[in-house]
Image 1: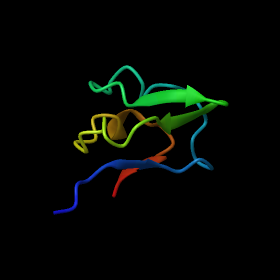
Image 2: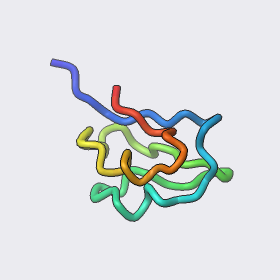
Image 3: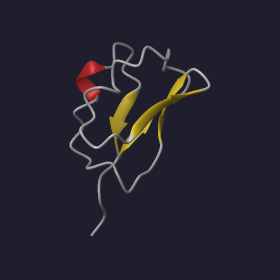
Image 4: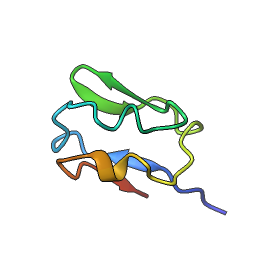
Length: 61
């Protein structure tokens, strides 16, 4: 069974960090001015961060 996780389009991400506080697992960080998934094992795949991204840079795969 494949597990869903988020993916972040680096070209769309403006580094606003609105996704960081809504991630209950702490799986996101701003690194070099862009949001990054720091561990796919930490991501629950529910996508709480998706609705917070004003650029639409976060999707579930």
